[in-house]
Image (cartoon, rainbow over all chains, first blue to last red; front, side, top):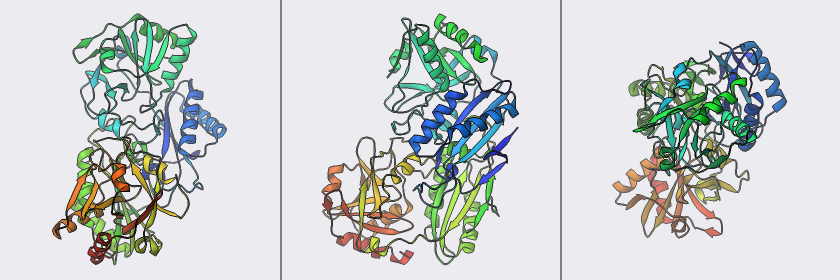
Length: 270
Length: 270
């Protein structure tokens, strides 16, 4: 396992880092195959967008080069890229003179049960709701206690993911993935302008679906619509697409559009 | 300046710490005078409560002893105490086998302008709203991006603090302090069951006020009530009490109950 801090192998960082103090930073979890990251440009785009929204300076070309160098060193596995605002003094105020810090961490590619992609997963209905905060919505920032609490709600292997709703009850996403519905041939995913993480695989799927003339909608989704969906699936950039086969007392077969979309991303290595 | 990690002088921590990865931990900012922390038991109580809510194991007697040892080494200044869930593997799921990590950091006592306590401060009306998340409300956890964004809204020295409201518009607190109103002789502060940090000075003031037969109410506060208040003040455990003398176009004189309460906490060193 490799760990780099600011481009150099290191296992530790300063106790003064604002990423620790306030979660003042962002991260990306990136699939690396044969030394390359297939969705790298989407990861970098989201990271750069998040830095801009948080007012963290970001040299995109440098991040790109460093990530490519790291991916080559990793070979096959997962590269986690953290960018923080850097060391701070006491107090919340950013000074605009901080030097952002970059952390890269590799891990083995997770070994998911093959039946998750083949037959689908059962979704755990999380009690933890996502708070509505438009200023942070969509970003993959380091304030992730809601996900920690939600993921701690189930330990059994029977549930492959958890469903997260917002505090108003709308359907938003999985704990570590995005959620899509299919209804009458239309592909639906939640609007993430109040909360949620705008996943790179979600973006990739929307683009590929639209280019294949599949109707797509990004909008608010009520819980009743979820239960009435024809197909349901989860996606992220590590596992690709998992059909959802059950939630509470509702069961779904793996649907045709879900299978089609699994095929559509096969060239990316999923 | 002193930095301890797990009770030992150190300036760095593991890159695998979940405090960095997810803000998975809590902190306390503690005033230290002559080697002692006057409000230590309140800080420890809040920290312990937060650990329990997040499912982080916490040996209160050990934290207490370590904090007292650190305060003695600091003498006069500020002790920041961070407790994280400790190192983690990839993924949000806590394993329950993590070893919580303790970080102690000292800094000089902040030098606030003396007129803040004497004549009061002007309050900046922050646009950043606090999201409503009952599961995290009241805790001083490490997910503090809302405070970072709010504190970045003003740079001028004219404003001593910022006012934070929740996404429904209710009055909650300052960016780094709690807020009290006085109306018709009653001391009012916001209910923090949806969002906000339950400050130790807020708790101390409520207890001391009640024991002096001052009527106190903890409840939802609308913005119109704030503007109609007779007196307004901020408090935290570093600066004690600052009267609010202005917000937007409204001005307040320093009121008699505010002055009385400043006197009531003088024995604590404020």
